[in-house]
Length: 173
Image 1 (cartoon, rainbow, N blue to C red):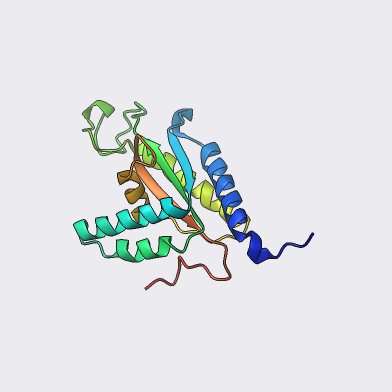
Image 2 (cartoon, one colour):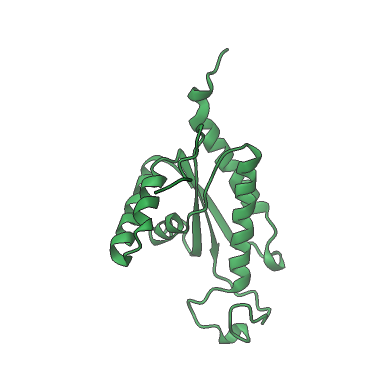
């Protein structure tokens, strides 16, 4: 059997994205409480997220959402990583409030934010193990969050994956 590398890129991108989700899942979590959620999307689902990014750009005036929406369409798939809101009841003050009880609704628990950040780092590190370029996109995550792709998650980020001779996610205009 002969397989040309160009013919297996999509399958390999999907396989690496799945490994990225495993890395995110097994990353350390604050107090050992797992509140991280992951999924991988391609095709029409990525186009839906890109369209929602354009809606956000229109509503917010944040023009980089337009650039990122176009960028996302160059991905073979996108890994989404988010965290469900769950105060860790440490009363650590890292969220800006002295106790967890004082923290108003809508203000994320700082430990949740750290957890999603560590999971994102683990996922990108796994892609790096395969020398696959990625880019963490707040913009794609916000659009996915608005589309409720990860139900119950308040902090979502997207990591587009593309196997190519040059990453389309860098040197952006």
